[in-house]
Amino acid sequence: MATCPPYPTRVHRHTHWWQRTWVRYGALITLLALSGLVILALVREQTGTQGFLVGLGLAVLPVPLLVAAFRWLDRVDPGPWRNLLFCFAWGACAAALIAIVANSFATRWIATATADPAGADTWGATVIAPVVEESAKAAAVLLVFLFRRRDFTGIVDGVVVAGVTATGFAFTENILYLGTAFGTDQLTGDSGIASVTAATFFVRVVMSPFAHPLFTVLTGIGFGIAALSAGRHRLRRALLPLAGLLLAMGMHALWNGSAAFGEYGFFGVYAAFMVPSFGLLTWLVIWTRQRELGTVRAELPAYVAAGWLTPAEPFALGSMRARRVARQYARKHAGKEGARAVARYEACATSVAFLRQRGRRGRAGADFTVRERQLLDALWSLRGVARPALDHAARATAPPAPAPRPVPPWAYGYGYGAQGAYGYATAHPPYRPYGRHPPHHPQASHAPYPQAPHAPYPQYAPPSPQYAPYTPPGPHRP
Image (spheres, rainbow, N blue to C red):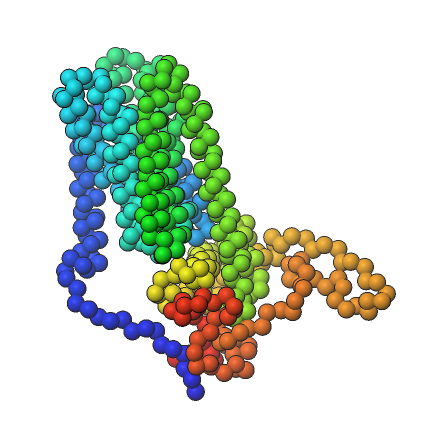
């Protein structure tokens, strides 16, 4: 009897000590820890202990809101928390340290060369700081793009990675500015609403907590579009992140230079440029997220036909409301572990849909088949908890079925008024599983093992054989 093709064997090659995973992780953690200690000492030296504590207490307020907002944008296909932790730590420690050292050095050099300290401060704020700070923050996006490519697949991923990095950078910068303002108030005796601390808090935390994330998100969008570009467009993939970085620098320079436009220059730039840009980018990201949900609804029916999913699941997985209802149902009947299992099932199904879309468009990697098999096996292991919850969510969130049309006397009941599952008319007979099926599938015993793998939908399979989707095993898995 034919057997399922085995997993590709891993070729063991000799690796040098610096190529080992634990060495790289250790070096990265050490770098971030040392950067954090140095930046902590520098900020405390400039603000004093009391100013540092006040600045820390005020600067932390917008951080949970911003991180939660970016995590909400990433709910369709959430990336691992370790990527977000790395990005926040890079922005708060490494990027902030680079910015403080480079900005101070460049400003002093310009002041010495031109003998104009006031002009040096203006040049430092409008030219040096945008270039240095945006480049330092973009380094985190580049590292995730290169070394966590599996988790970086589109615009939303770029926005989330860039936004969390900028949130960490703004956190450290706000500690410095608010602590310095508190020290100034201590010297002048000001307090209350009229104090410098209150004014700084209002401008940086209340009015513009999204300023740094907005700048760096442009860089993330450039990397996200590059991730969507086909492999043959190498020049485009190189230029798009650079274009996003230049736009981020330009917007940052305009924001920093708004004070030079007169007494109301800051408010003019804020109202005429920053707020519309923030609204436009927010709309773009939400629209992109809706397209991702459409991709889930369009790609998963192939796995329904092969027997991996039930007919209700593409609808439920393509709706954020249905996903939430499914998790709530699982939590009610199976506790927190059940809710986590449903969330894991939703994430794996979304990854399968995106992987299949990349394969059809010729953008999947060489590990397409292995990755698809891993995700499908994960889905199959979680089906016991997830399927009842998703079925309940599909029924609870389905649109009401339209009233059946009256059957004319001459029709003799040939299909008039027939409705499919969840209120959708059935114009075609149900999908028939194609090729091999999941383990213990009802039709698995009637479908012999083919010798070669087939796609659930052959017409959608990519032309290159290495991207052919993995198909379910037969009645007896090896």
